[in-house]
Length: 494
Ligand SMILES: Cc1cc2nc3c(=O)[nH]c(=O)nc-3n(C[C@H](O)[C@H](O)[C@H](O)COP(=O)(O)OP(=O)(O)OC[C@H]3O[C@@H](n4cnc5c(N)ncnc54)[C@H](O)[C@@H]3O)c2cc1C
Image 1 (cartoon, helix red, strand yellow):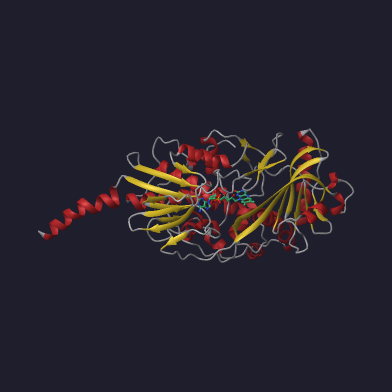
Image 2 (cartoon, rainbow, N blue to C red):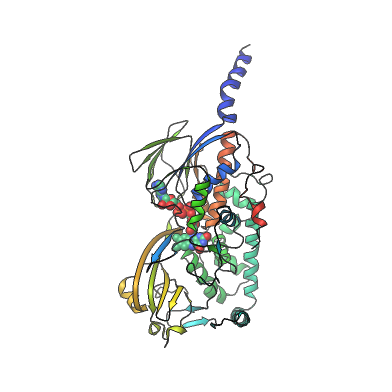
C-alpha cells in the first residue's frame, strides 16, 4: 500500500517536473554568435508544444559581439570576426535564413574584410624575405597566370611540406564536419573533452602546433615563415598554440573565404529576430545566483530576472559577473589583439622601398620581438593617395610609431580586443554545465578554437543539452522546420 502511494506521488509530482514539463524560461547572457545561436537552436529543436521564453542580455547597444563593424572615414569595415570558411555550414545557413548576401573576397565592390586576392609579403623587420607577385589586370586569364605563378613561388620556397600542411588541415576539417551529422546519430555532449574526442579532435589539443607539424614532417622553414604568419594574423600568437587552434587557423587562410555583405553581425541579428526573444540591449548582467529551482540574474539597470536555465555565452575570462555559489573553472587568459584602422598611405621608406605600389597588400610578419605589428592589410583602395588599412598588433600602436609607418594618416581608429584565448597545450576545458545543474557555458569550447562557426557548433550542442536535460529526451530536428542544420547546409551551392 505504502509503495503504491509513493508511486502515485512520484507520478503526480516528479514526472511532470523533470520529464514532461512543457514550459521553460531561459536567460542568455551575450548576443554574439554563441548566444544568438543558442536561442535559435532552442527554437529549432524544442517540441512545438513546449512553451519556452527566452531573454537575451547584451551590455552593448548592438548585437553581434566580436562580429562588429568599425567606421573609418565614413565607411564601414569588419573590426573583429571577418572571414568565414566555405565549410562553415551554420554560418552559411544563418546567412541564407536571414536573406543576407554572401560577399566573396574578389567581389569588385570590396569594402570589408581582407582583400584575399592581393599579393602578400613576409616582413622580417628589415626586408621582405618572401613576396608574391601582383599584377593589376582586368583580364581573368592574366589573374589566373599570376595566381599559378604565385603557387609556383610558394612551392619553390617550401616544397612538398605545403602538401603535408594541406593534408593536415583537410584531415582536421573532415573531422570537424562530424558536428553536422544528423542529430539521430550525434550524441549530446556534457563536456568539451567528450565532444572533441567524439570527432577525433581531442589529441590535437594536447600538443602544440609546432610539435604536431614537425611530427608529420613539415620543414622548419615553412613553420617559421608561412605557418607563423598565419597564426599571428588569425590568433595573434606563435606556433606554440595548440595543434587544434593551429589547424583551424590554417584552415582560415585558404581559398574561397567569405563574409556577409554589410557585416557578419547581421547573422546574430537575424537569429535573434527569428527566435522570438526578449532582447535587453545596454543591460549587463552583474550577478547570477542559484536559488535551487531557478536562477536570479541581476543587471546593471537594477533589474532582477528569474529563469530556470541560465546560459553564459561570453568568455568568462575578463568579465566580473558574480556567481553565487562561486564557480571554479580552469584559469584562462585572453590574448589581446589591437586592431588599428588607418585611412591614409603607408610610407615605402619604412619598408626600405621606393614606392608605395611595391608594398604588398598584406604585410605579414615572422616572430621577432623587434617587429611592432602582426600584420598590415589593405581593406580598400580609395585612390592612389588614399587607402584604408587594418593593422593587427599585440601592443597598442602609438602615434609616434604610426607616423613612422604611414606617410599620410587622415583617420585612425584603435580597438583593443580581448580577442581569443591564449592557447596553451595541453588545453584544460571548463565543462558546458558549470554547476552540475542548469547553468551552461557556451564559451568553454573556445579553448579548442575561437571562430564564428565553432561558437555556433558549441551553441547547438548547448541548446540540445538544455532541452535533453530539462525535458528528459534528446531532441532532434523538428520535421518541417526551416532547418538550420547541416542537411540544408551541405547542399548549398557555393
Ligand atoms: C580581431 C578579431 C578577429 C577575428 N577574426 C575572425 C575571423 O576572421 N573569422 C572567425 O570565424 N572568427 C574570428 N574571430 C573570432 C570570432 O569573432 C569569435 O570567436 C566569435 O565572434 C565569438 O562569439 P561569441 O558569441 O562566443 O562571443 P562574443 O562575440 O564575444 O559575444 C559576447 C557578447 O556578450 C556581451 N557581454 C559581455 N559581458 C556581458 C554581460 N555581463 N552582460 C551582457 N552582455 C555581455 C558582449 O558585449 C558581446 O556582445 C576574430 C575575433 C577577433 C577579436
